[in-house]
Length: 394
Ligand SMILES: Cc1cc2nc3c(=O)[nH]c(=O)nc-3n(C[C@H](O)[C@H](O)[C@H](O)COP(=O)(O)OP(=O)(O)OC[C@H]3O[C@@H](n4cnc5c(N)ncnc54)[C@H](O)[C@@H]3O)c2cc1C
Image 1 (cartoon, helix red, strand yellow):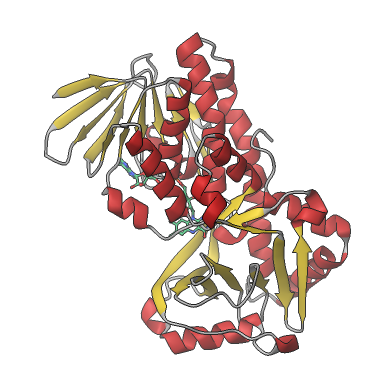
Image 2 (cartoon, helix red, strand yellow; image 1 turned 120 degrees about the horizontal axis):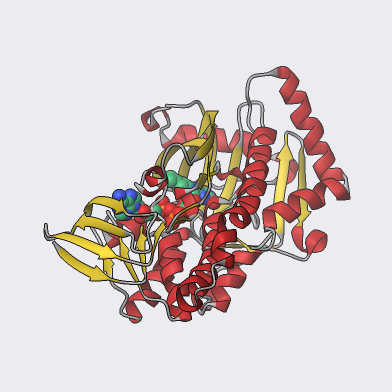
């Protein structure tokens, strides 16, 4: 077996893993990244699209803001609506913070370009990833590389950035980890369409037929979602049915607003669940991003939480490995989880406020909540503060 040594072995080349590698390099810490998929597959995955203020600040501060400045679209807020009513919440007026529309695919491209330019070692298309000796100062990761060779990376620390299906979270012994999970009784049908958005900012729509969201990726690409029952086959939703449902739920014709349909280029059904695992550190293994927590996408928090974790983890590992100072590393799990639980609550709150559960009592509570959030400055500010994002160290 071929063996190499590095300071941090990073499992997963998604946004958490690649950003961690980038931030650690800036601090002078060497990393090797391993990834089970191909570079093209990871870069092409259509996922998150909204960056909160702290994410943008961190990307800018670490030299990754150039294309984001040019191509990202800064939004002041969102629209919240239910039949007959549409209200704009202006996050800038309410909290002084805003959000940016800039897809995860673009963030990933920027990260890969920066790491490639720096000569970062990334092993793509690996198999049989396994973690070893986590409770020692020399943990290691073994895997089979794309050419079929067995390899071992011995490191001072391992960063588990391998998402919800990776081996890192389950490498924490069962008697050490606690997990919390909630599966929601509905999913999202997400579509990407080659048509200019029919709105300047995102529209979150409560509707008796189910939730709908009008988001966007660029001036010419719209991202749209419809609440559907769990396990809905995509084949049940031909394009015409999708546009009809979007027009109804988003209020085509309401106060003169119109929705323009266009060619749909991608369709998929996304199940919705919440998951948290604690602690986010075991020995020399540190979990970050989806490896430690999952949120339903309603609050646009998944990618932002991954970035926030890594924003805490990079200085913690640098202090530990370069100066032998363990204080930030020891505090990492508790500090990160404070924000994780805040975002978990916010994502659950947005989700349960906007989706139909079939319970008439909940329906009246949802409408009452929507009226409060859109008419009270205190209610609106709470939503705005959470949506535009709390500081990374919150
Ligand atoms: C279908 C979908 C849609 C989403 N939509 C939204 C959205 O609209 N808004 C939002 O905010 N968030 C959304 N999210 C969540 C957001 O994309 C994630 O929170 C974000 O990708 C987290 O980044 P990460 O780096 O932690 O994990 P990931 O991006 O999942 O990266 C983990 C990486 O680890 C790799 N890996 C897994 N197993 C192994 C292994 N054994 N060995 C080596 N590597 C491995 C994976 O291939 C992957 O590349 C969505 C997620 C999904 C799945």
